Image (cartoon, rainbow, N blue to C red; front, side, top):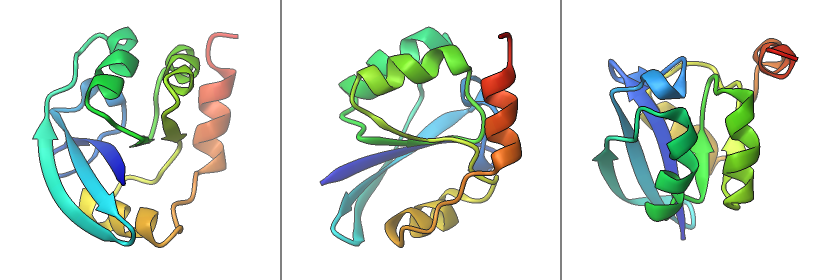
Length: 116
């Protein structure tokens, strides 16, 4: 069983995780969505890894996220998908289930070169 979180704003993947209005959390069993819930994550980006762990999140789909938090999230054993194109959460979860999520290399480069 997987629990996949997508930070959302105005019905679509939020550009920056810490600016989302809420997270849609999908419980996935095999190739089917078993349930969906909405949770409000902490606004302090440094608290997101602990919050995600408490929610039982196994996977996190993001567009951009502070690179300092990447290590904290992976230390919680949460799979992180970064640089994902902005779209509706239903389309993104469908791509996730089908193994078709693709990262934008330009976004990855922006994140990894920030504040070096």
